[in-house]
Image (cartoon, rainbow, N blue to C red; front, top):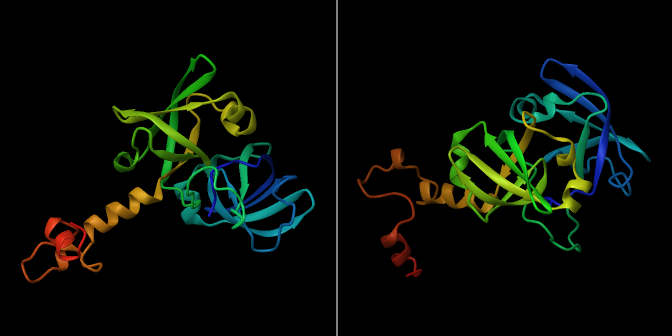
Amino acid sequence: MFTGLVEEIGIMKSISRKGEAMLLNLSAKVVTEGIKLGDSISVNGVCLTATSFDASSFTVDVMPQTYRNTNLKDLKPGSRVNLERAMAANGRFGGHIVQGHVDGVGTIVGTSQDQNAVVYTIKPHKPSLFKYIIPKGSIAVDGISLTVVEAHGGTFTISIIPHTLAETVLAFKRAGDTVNLECDVLGKYVDHLLKHGRGGVDEEEVSDGGESGINLPFLAANGFV
């Protein structure tokens, strides 16, 4: 699990591709401190496993499922990426719960200045993500824990302070560039429970003619209301 607080910007040293499988070697200074084989590292918001490392670089595998559903396929040698180690149990939880399980890719459709902040307008490629993108709610954009400002018309906006720009790859992204999106996991769990609330039984599997899911009678019967 991650917090969405980027620790450093890494540089892609080399990329080996075989079909939709990739082997990435990245240069880094901070996330390699205390690294162990098999450790999880967030790369542009994607949870990946360190398969080899030295004091200034590490290597990760990208499987086809990750290749298809993230913007890692767009990387080239020299590309900058956001890096974060898995959250330490004794550390401060400064962002929000970020799993590193990307829900989809979005495209930056515009940027604008709002006094000391830069506002990014992003269009998710999957319209289905919009039920999880809530104004003032949390979202991870390329692994950065951010707050949604507005969400309407098929796009949403985020407002970036100068410190975040200086410490992440958003400073180098312009309209037309892609970003990885991970919606707040709490919303996804609530959505799943509302759909499959009767002990995991889906509506199509209910044979007694009753209602499935979490509803007022269910809540009352279980002491919630």
